[in-house]
Image (cartoon, rainbow, N blue to C red; front, side):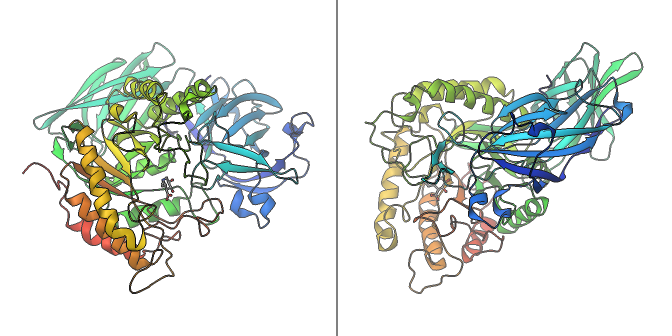
Length: 608
Ligand code: CKX
């Protein structure tokens, strides 16, 4: 069992071969594949690119909306020189469930569609020969798995997804697949925490390995010069005149970890490392001890045709747009993103609020709007017979997300849930368990938060007491009091903010969502809802409110770009709250944001 979630790297002791490309693919609506021997070869397969979501590639609706079991297969050769070493197939993500078979033998299974897992195939591979890899995946939603939803059966017998969340249930092998060759004794994980002492910094590290060999750790600067070294599985690297990682001014060191056997290097792993501290102090957010005001978006991994499949062109374009508009932060709503996104944030100096897949934790009526929110009366989502199962899965997701992402300088906070039903008593045990676990897992003790749905108010919201940052998703002027009602929306918004001020106990408040659906085709003077003019007016009203409360320390608009959802009367072929279109072109509101965010000082509302 190799549980290492380290990002794959080629070093003197490690090899990485990409298995991405055109694979074979077949739906299995009758779940007959295993019994019928499909692990040896799919009987009626078509081609399918990996990574990608299969859905939007097809031109017929049954295929796009397909819900159930589906198969992928490919062949690959394992070099003979790899004999005696550990051979692993690393999946960046398979949405939502996977069973992996190599040469007909079941190797492992995995639940959860947005984090990596390893299939250790050391004993199942044939060297210098072609190996046959088959993956049985499933994209059904349930209430015991994240994200939550239902799987329904239509009268024609076809299954469909009924998400409790507002994004399309894209599925497939959506992130890269890599074949790894590792030494038997290898680095499994490492973690770091930082302390700044005047101009210097201390990096406390812990390394996990599979054996007892001597561990040595080196820190190189951006020019490759050794600046600190230490030995042992735990230790301290003292960095003189440390160059700190900062917003839009990143500086990345390289950490090199080696396992030694006498003079021989048994394993070597390296990673990039930004030195920085991040903390909540009173109602301020401090990066390297200096105040920072967050501005940016909630995002999605979502683009035309590719769906949620990793597309580096889109990743790069998104960062270009984020820089252009003056953003410094985004939330990985509503799942951990592909690792490439975090490495680029480290490089570009962006701040990330890293979110688990806990979205849809409410029984909803229209994908995302719950009937019983805010009443505090009905039995809650976390008081079901199945809650223990959900909690166990949620803990696994939190564990793997923090394990995978904890060393990124860009990651400043953990968002443990998005818009859960959180007005009933059961919320508290569920939340406490996870919020405590996040602190246990993260040596840097990053602040923990969750995005609070608009119907959970200061006096009805249970669970907010566990958050280090209060994150609000608010839609005054859109879902509540929209159109001409926007005049009253502002007053109602302010009243609620006064309420949060009463219960926030000195903590900062940020907005993790605010936004208005807007069609890029619509202009209207005077404005109407859905027009670009209305989106601007909506934003101006929200900005006025944000600016008048000092404890508001961040604004992440919903959403960075228009994105796909399931079809329905509330959506025009997707959610249109983007500042950019789905094709990443600016709507008018992007210029309003740019104008504001470029003028706001980094330490806006900091201590004078
Ligand atoms: N928040 C009333 C979660 C997001 C949705 C967003 C929306 C909701 C609002 C909840 O995933 O897209 O409706 O635009």
